[in-house]
Each structure stands twice: as C-alpha cells, then as structure tokens.
Image (cartoon, rainbow, N blue to C red; front, side):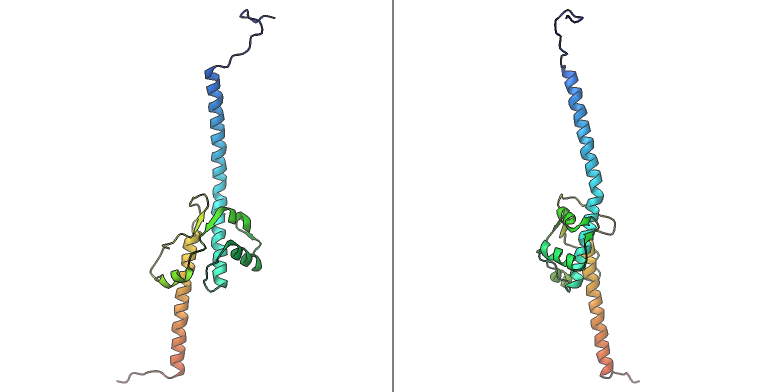
Length: 177
C-alpha cells in the first residue's frame, strides 16, 4: 500500500516543533500541579504552626514555664493531658511539618523579658520547609513570648500583693502631720 506521497509504509515524522509543543505542555501542566500542591499546603502549614504554639504553651503552663526537652517529652505531655489531635490533625502530622529548638531556655528568656518588650528576639519554632506561614495572631514564637511575658507580669503582681498582705498583717506605717 502506498501513501499519497508515493512512499510505501510512510511513518509520521516527529518534528522539532511537535516535540517542543509536547515538552512545553508537559512543563506547564507539571508546573501548575506543583503550584496547586503548594497552595493547598499553605493552610496546613498555618494550622501546624498554630498547633505547635498550643502544645508548647500547654506544656509550659503545666511545667512552671519550663521548655520541653524533646519531641517525645512534648508528645507524652500532649497525650497525657487528653490531647488526641491538634489543629492540623494527629500530633505526628504537626511534628512532620514543624522544627522546634529544644535547646531553648525559657527560664533565661523569662528573666530577661521587659514588660515594655513587644516582640521576641528568638525564633525557636519554624516550618521544616523554611517558610513563614501562620494565621494572623497565631505565630508560635510570638505566642510563646506573650505567654512568658504575661507569666512574668502575673508573678510580679502576685509577689506585690503578697508583700502588701504581709504589711497589713504586721501593722503599717502611718503618716502624721
């Protein structure tokens, strides 16, 4: 059987133009899929950061502002305090996305915080991918800082009121004119 050009068994020829179109289409589709995956991960990363702040603050509340020493310590506390899931789901999902600096010394920071400070000078909770995604008001480093600062203020107030109570129980000074 002959083709219209007179040659037998003519095969379609792959042209450079056709190859370029196929490769370009593949690249565009691949790029769109990767972009969509990234967009869909943003909320999950934000929830993971929120969850990290939640579990760290819960730990510090129960341990006199001490910082956990490892993921295992944090996971054990989370499980024993009745926390089954986090904002993102299972604890393991949060752990898969988050990096925590367990060498952080919260007691040193607690001592150095001034009541006029408004932002942390530390960054001990981060996303493993290096991003900085978080819901407004739920950035974990700021939340840890705010917790420590509030603890310092409350403790100072409690110390002041206990000193005033001691003064009232033992008499007080009066000013005469």
